[in-house]
Structures are given as structure tokens and as C-alpha cells.
Amino acid sequence: MKHIPNRILALLFLLSAWGYIGCSSNDEPVRIDCATVSITVAVAGTTNPTSCAVSNGSITVAPTGGEEPYTYNLNNTSTFQSGATFSNLASGIYTVTVRDRNGCTGTISNIVLAAPNAPEATANAIVADASCDNDTGSVTINATGGTGTLSYSRNGTTFQASNVFQNLRAGSYTFTVRDENNCVTTLTVAVPNATGVTFNGSIRALFQNNCGGGGCHPSRGDLFTYDAARLRAASIKSRTQSGNMPPNASLTQAQISQIACWVDHGTPEE
Image 1: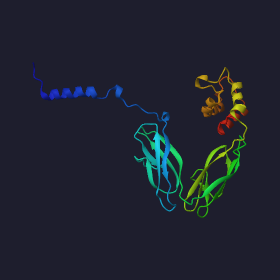
Image 2: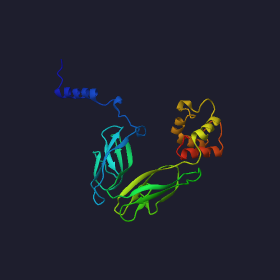
Image 3: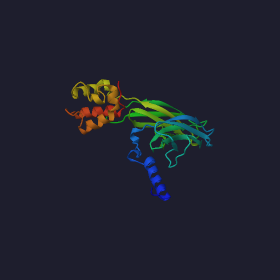
Image 4: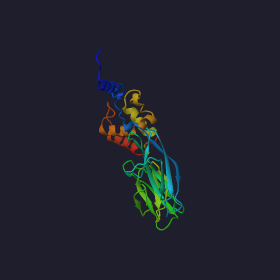
């Protein structure tokens, strides 16, 4: 038997080992579609600053979904950290974004840290949105306390001197009141829908009269039922406006506008 040099044996061993543990066509990394990943972020705890003049507040969040490990970002900066707690925070409104190992993200907004002696606010005048064509709702905020002149915001970013917010569509809004020391308070106000366009009142009948068969798209959820129609509301609006729905009938412009009104005003059932 011929003697095989040690260096050849070593090479054969390496090739054999690589074939056993190396990459193969089955070892390619699985690509994650973040559109199919739901990461939910909840507030696990907050500590309010002891005054508006100091930054000793904190926020802790708890994510679920996606794949660990997570990293955490405060207020959409470019920096992510490994810990779920943000410390040394002043009074204000915060947004936390969580990113998982695959780069998928989840966000929670409007986390409020309020220091003592912050303004107090209530909504003392709410006008319902009664038009499909124009946003006619309004909210007037009544605020007291705080220091100096108060300013008001509908989104926590852009502030105004007026405490009246007009041209609002039916829906839920978070308003913020801020004083001169940057102390803030928030309140959530619902602007009622008074358009009269509801699923049970008109939209179900519109579907039934214009969609053939015993139900619309039963394989995707019968659109004659509220839950199925609500879940596909955005698609229904888009397809009816483009003329692709219903496939075997045509809607009048008034009917298309009625569907859009129902979707745009929160898909009310009653």
C-alpha cells in the first residue's frame, strides 16, 4: 500500500469536514418580509420628572413579536441601544421604536412624561363632523395652570397660540398643552361622526345590491358582514374608485363617494 503524505491526508480531512458542516443549498439564510412581522411595543413603566427644570424621568418599554435580540430608539434618532429603559428624560412627549434582529420595527408614540405643576386640560366644546365632502369637526381645549403662556398642539410637534382646532374629520385625536417651562399635559378627544353613513344604515345594502351571488368574495370574508368589510375597507375604497370593484357592475359616482365617506370617517357600524 502506497504511503500518503501527511499534508495530503490533512487536506482530505479538511475537505471532508467542510462537506459535512459547510454551506449547502439548504443552508441559505431565510429572508424575512417585515411586512408580515408584527412587533408590538407596550409601555412597561414610566417615571415622571420631579420638576420641569430637571431631566430625571424614565421610560421602559416591553416589545413582543419579531425575533430577539431587540434594540431600542428614542424619538427617531439614528442611535439604537440594547436596553429597554431610557433615563434622564425631561418632561415631554416621546416615541420609542424597537428593532428586532431582522431589522423589523415596531413603534409606540405619545408617551407623556409630565412634571408637577404641569397644565391641566379638558375639552369643553366638541363639534361633530357632519360632512362627507369637508371636515367640519372642531375641538376647543380649556387649559389652566402651568407657568406663563400656554400653547396647544394636535400632534405634539406643531404648537399654536389658539386653543381651538377646526376642520377635523371624525375620529380620535390627542391634544397637547405646553407651558413656558416645557411642562406638558395631554388629553384624547373623540370627534363624533355625524355624516349618517354607516355600514348597517347604507353600506351593507349598497354591497348587497351591487355584488352578485350570496356574498361578496366569500373566500376572503363575506363583505356583507361588518367585520370582513371593515378589515378590507381601504382596499374597497381604492378598488371602487378605480372602477375595479364590483367586477360585474358599475357604481354611480354618488355610491363611490358614499363608500369613501364611510371609510374616511372610521368605518362606523351603526
